[in-house]
Amino acid sequence: MHTVWVEKYRPRRLSEVIGQKAIVERLISYVRTRSMPHMLFAGPAGSGKTTCAIALARELYDEGWRDNLIELNASDERGIDIVRGKIKDFARAATIGQNEFKIIFLDEADSLTGDAQAALRRTMERYTATCRFILSCNYSSRIIEPIQSRCAVFRFKPLLEADVNEYLMRIATAEGLDLKDDGVDAITSIAAGDLRKATNILQVAASDAHAIDQDVVYECTESMRPSEVDELLKTALMGNFTGARSKLDDLIVKHGLSGEDIVKGIHKAVFDLPVDEDSKIRLVDRVGEAEFRIVSGSSERIQLEALLAHFANEGRNASRKVPR
Image (cartoon, rainbow, N blue to C red):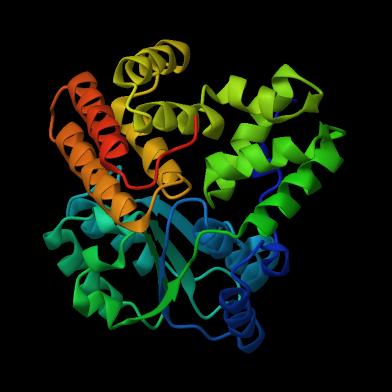
C-alpha cells in the first residue's frame, strides 16, 4: 500500500520530533506531571506544530488518545458556529477513562473571525476543568489578546538545514533510496525550513528515480535553479537588458512559474551578487516594490521586465563592475 510519507514518518513520540528542542522538553514535562495549561503554537508551516500536538496526546492517553483528542481546522469553518457547535459539544462530553481532561486541537486558529475568537475565549473559561485547548497558528498577532493571555505561547522556528538533512536521510535509508548530497541540499533550499514540504519533495523525486540528485529534484519540482537566477541577474547587471529579458522568457516557459515565485527567487539571489552594499539596498527596495505590485494585481510580465531594467540601469551606474 502506497502511503503519504508525511504521515508515514510523522514522529509518534515527542522525543522523536526533529528540532524545537526547548519546546519538546517543556511538553515532555507536562506529560510527566500530567498537568498542562492551554497552549498556543505559533510558527511557520511545516515546523512541527501539529506533530507536537498529536505526539503529546499519544503520550498522555496511550491507546485512548483518539477518544480524548479532537482535531479541527479553523480555516474550513471560520465562523462562530464551529465554536458553538463542534467545540462546545466535545467540551461538554465526559472524559474517557481515568483522564482528568481532554484536548481540543484547533489548527489554523488565526483564520477564526473576531466573533468566533470571542466565543472561543468564553468556552475556554467555562470548560477549563475538563478540557485543554491547543491552538495552532502561523501568526500569533492575529489571535486576540484575551486568548493569548490564557495560553502558554510556544513559538516554533523554521527548522535548521542540519535538522532537515537528518530527517531526509532517515527517510531515504528507510526507503532504500540513493540520496546524493547535492540532492539533499537542493531539497533543503527549496523547502526553506518546511519539513512537510521537504518530505513531499523527496517522495515526488523518489517516484521518478532511485538515485536522487539536484537535477532530479529541480526537474520534478519545476523550480528555478539558483544558478539560473544568478545568471539572469548578472546578465542584467552587465547592462544587457535584452539578454536578461530573453533568459526571463526561458524561465517562464521552462518552469511555468508565477511572477511571485520568480520575484522570491530574485530576492534570495540579490544578497550573493557581486555589488556593493548601497546597490544591494536599492535592488532589494525595488524587488519589494515589484512584489507588492504583482500581489496587488499588476501585470507580472511588465513588473518583472521593469525590475530587470532597474538591475541593468544599476549595473551601468555601479562603481564596481560585474566581471564578464
